[in-house]
Length: 195
Image (cartoon, rainbow, N blue to C red):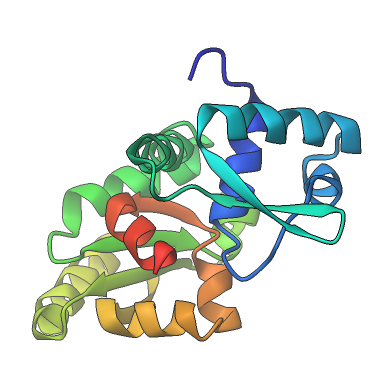
């Protein structure tokens, strides 16, 4: 997509990271802190590009990611990677640390107080998703990281199936966690959210 604006990117991420909610232009305008007409203009552009689709309920249009379109999937991967790589230095440092030291996870998401407080957070909350047979290896990797750092990782372990079930059940804790910064496994997360 040519000349994608910050608001257009945030529009797409807001819809993707909140699979339990239905958004119309008015509700998205409040999240983006823009006018309803501005949000409607963005929605029309994104729909024309094939990134989102809508369904009508009464007079309102509710938007969702157009997962059928490979371009949409690739674009969300791009947005999630950009969010991880172009964050504040402290978050970026943890993104790089986790990418380099965690080898047995399929999905890694930073969440919680570190995203709001940065280096003032007491610990580093992280979701680690893998298959159950790799949990012991993953726990050893976390232990090694915790030996080397002042701030300790506070991991939440999930199997891929557990995470999929929690998203399907609209588990509020997991839905809040997936709003975090995706360090690894954007494609796999997209597949889970799509289901």
